[in-house]
Length: 96
Image 1: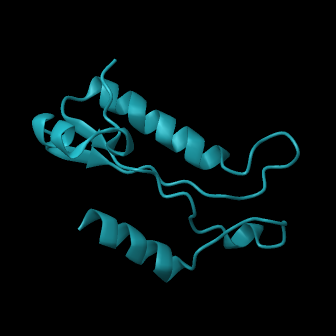
Image 2: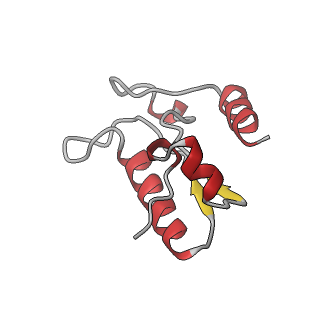
């Protein structure tokens, strides 16, 4: 299994890897009750991105965005959220 995660690659490895596409996992940090970690959405989306990269040639896995739009969980303690316009701009800035 080859490593495709930008966070774990040197600049030389990225350049030598011939990457011509990238995948960006987006998750959230929100309450999932007493049975799941707050970062579950990010963990799952990043793991799936890595598994996709194992199957797709020269696909680079970008670092996940850990805070999303979770306003509907605002009443739960320690749920983090960005505004809709903010998360949209963050994704735009990363991908463009």
